[in-house]
Image 1 (cartoon, rainbow, N blue to C red):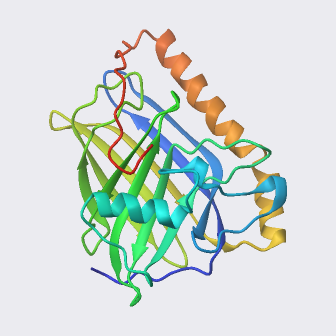
Image 2 (image 1 turned 90 degrees about the vertical axis):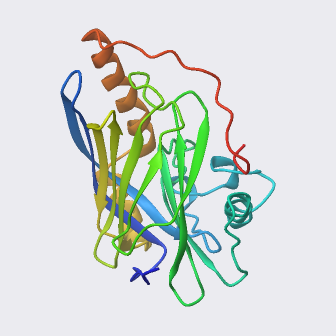
Length: 245
């Protein structure tokens, strides 16, 4: 696999997130946000503005983030070596709260080459799911949809995913394809900046209460779609894959 160029870590990544729904109703929004790009073996702590905990992600809260990622990849048939590096793009817990719709873990060999990626998805019902993927040299791959996320989409189809990780840009783009139709797209694009105190405070001031905003906007847009009479798909209990509690 390709060897990605990496920004200086830890990094705060100001950017924009966008969602586009195409059928049966058209609905689009984009807003300013920021995420964090960190090495799970050396996560930063910025008091109430940003912290990271294994309890907020896949696996056991009694293990480290790295141990949980390694346990999940091993359960999927990919064993991480001791000198492998694991980078995480995620929201931090801020002002006592975190909601992270999608976390991305890049698992890198000691040579810097990509071993695999893990996508961890959270829905607003307190459930989580994860996928392991082997991107091609352009950072692209596809995954089957196995998890109830939006109450307006059934659990079938596939995700077409494109990832980009460079010193200048971090991008996560996902298309949901159902019955050969691209029905939904979501993307985050940001520019990583070294997470010095000035940059952290600037991001928090530019987008205050960021994780609360994520939670609120998801619900407001959902209410808007419901008021437009978009049918709700019943949710069934989710059984997460091995390595995801």
